Structure formats: structure tokens, C-alpha cells
Amino acid sequence: MSQDDGDIPNFLMLDQIPVNMDQQLETDLLEPVVFSQGAATTDGFARFTLQNKGFLHSHSKLFVTLKPGTGQNAGFLQPHVGIGQIIKKAVLKIGNKTLNEIDSWAGLHAVKSSLISNENNLEREMYQTGRHMNHGFDYNDGSKVFADTYGLDNGVEYKADDLLMPGWAVMDARQPAEVPSYSIDLSDLFPFLKVNQLPLYLIKEPINIELTFEPTQERRIQVTQGNTLTALCEIVRDELKFCADYIFYGTTDEMDRFAMSRGRDMSFSFVDYRLVEHTTDRTQLASGIVRNLGMANRMVPRVITLLPSDTQQETTFLGKNNSIAPSVDAAGVTGQVKYNIRYNDRFEFTSDVDNVSRLFSIFQQAEGIPFLTRQEYSDQGTVAGGITDKKFSGHQQDGNLAGQLFSLGTRLTNGRVGQRGIELHLSGDFPAAGRLIDLLRCYCEYIRVARLSDGYFEVYNA
Image 1 (spheres, rainbow, N blue to C red):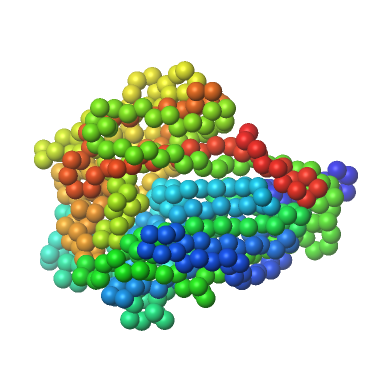
Image 2: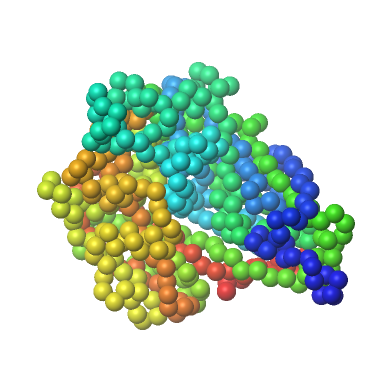
């Protein structure tokens, strides 16, 4: 790099770009080059191809509108995931190389969405992404001060002990033109774009975003009680767009100088997520399970573990994006649970973690503070009141939320994973009735390196 180029920041890293840097923004509204609606039991698919110009803005958006099936007159989206519930898999490809790929994307998105504050969900996300996970006190009759319970709060008053969605957010098959459109942020689809951005103008290969959608039956929308079940919900093809924002920096030749000085050979590290799924049930968990998650010879900073009831569909308002907590008996005593991670011939914790409160603290240290209540996370904390038994769109709130958002997250501290990979050790007493665990789902966050040399990408594990 010449001395004249020393004042040019690294445009790949968002935190290194001065706030007063001149920028020009160009927006393209892209149609999918490939689109498949899917069917009742078949996944849908869409591919978008980006133009090789400027830098791709990390907050570019995917616009989606749904068409409820006949009889779905009051459909709504899962409050903790929003429109993201329709996404099954997200892939970012450059040429024939996969840069980022996340399976069971909505499950990971549910965990990341729990880190958004309730106020943001109510005041912004409800309108942009359909996420409206917000809590409010359920005040006692005749009082504006005392509340024995709490529940969901979307800004609408209860109607006969039932909280309905605002009129504008209701998905009514009888009024398809009034169904709202929502957006999904590019940096939510591919989390590494929260800190990096892609120099599209330096890439000589095609850049594609490939999205796999959930089947049209029971997966794309939640239904209010009394509505027709198993009706097919479709994506409106004419309103499926990708709003690509391209950034151009500087007022003269800054981007050309960046290309000459750094663009010929540059590299950056980023994180990707590898999904590991195994079928399981409460009997196996009661005996204790040991599952190898793979990831040998890779740098793995974190592991997220969920225990969903994957068969839950449109008749519950969390759908399949749940995670079941250990059972709690009538006396309020929590069932036993033990958790540990083993790799490089040592355990992450010197003794198994068997306290739910500590599990929550470990998750917080690994991921951040989840804006969930104690009862939602662990089904505890009901002695002085808890989640209301009133309804949300015809569904009991306490039955749909209590102990349904239990997540395990661990930051690994022993360096590169050895040849034996990572072992998950987990046991516990989990519910024998109601929503039953049928899957173990783990997301292993690992570090990859992308190298751009003379316009062509190479991607490999760190």
C-alpha cells in the first residue's frame, strides 16, 4: 500500500469505517431468478442473484407476503420469530463456493431474537418483521396497580379474556390484498454480515442467495382457534423481492484505490453455524445421552443446544420453534438436569451443571441477555403469580409459553477442537405429558476464513 492510500479504511469491516465517510447508496429491487412454491409436504425454494457492484449493505431486506389458505381468517405469525418462521435454510454462495449455510434457520433465529428487548419488538419489529414478543402486566379486575399475572402485550386491549392481533396484522384469506408484507434482514439470514460486508464490485463470480421455505401446510402461519386447519399457505410470488442496497464510498477514487491496494488479495474471518440434529425422547434423556457433535479440527467458540417438540404446528403459537424445559411437579420442584460439554479430553465444566439458574447464566455469558421471563425459560417462578391463563388468538398463554423457551448455550474456552470432536453430555427429567421432546438440535458456531484473490473467492475453515 502506498502512503497515499493510508487514509483509506478497511471497507470490509463495518466498525473501521468513519462515521463521516461520504457514501452513496443505490438500491435494486430484485426478483427471484428461481422460485418454487412448494407443496403440503414439499419445501419451497427461491434464488436471488446480486449484481457485482459496490459493497452489499448488511441491512438489505427480503420482502415477503403470505397468502393464507381458505378458512384461515385470522392467521398470525409466531411472536418470537415473526416472518422468519417460513425460512428453513439460508445459503449464501459465491460462484460454486458456499460462504454461509444455516440449516433449521428459524430455530437459531428464535434464539437470536430472544436477545431483542421487548420495547423494540413492540415498537419496531412487530411492523417490520412480525416479531411481537412483548410482556405486560395483566392487572387485576378493578385495579390499575395490582397484577397477579402477566402475559403478552401487543398494544391491543383484551377482548373477553382473549388478546387478538391488531387489525392491520391479521392475515385473512377473505381479504388477501390487506395481508401485511414483512421483511427479513440480510444480517439475520447470515449473521456474519453484522460485522462484515461484501465487496461485490471486486468479485468476478456470481453471488447467489438461496432460501429454502417450509412446506405450505401447517408450517408457514399460525391459526386462531376456530379457523380451518391444514389449509395451504402460499408465498405471494409477485411480492417476493430482495431489496439489495449497494454502497459506494468516497467522492472521488477511494474505491478504486482500495481495490488497487487491498482488493487484489484480501482475507477475513467470519462465523458460520453447523447444525447437528438427533432424534431423542424423555426416556433417553432420563437415562442420559452422550452425542458427538463432530467439528473436529475446527475453531468452535460456542455451542447452542435446543430440545424442541418438532411436531408442534399451526395450532400452537410458538409452532415447532420451541425448546422444552425440565419438568416441574405440582409442588413446584424442578426435575433433575445435568449438562456438560467435553472436547480435547476435558470437560468444559469441572462438574456437570445441574442448576437451571446457572444454566441460564451460562447461556447469558455465551449469547447475551435473553428478554424472557423465568417461567418461559424454566417453568419456574410461579409462586407469586406467573403467566396469565387468558388467551392469545384463542390459545392459552400459560400452556403455550411456560417452559417452552429453554435454551442451552456455552462458550468454549479450550481452543481448537481435537480429532475426537465435541461431545454433549445431557440428562434430565423432562415432561411426560403435553408437548414432548422428540429432537435434540445443536448449532455449533465455528470460524471460517474467506480469501478474495484477483476477484475469486476461496473459503476454508480456520
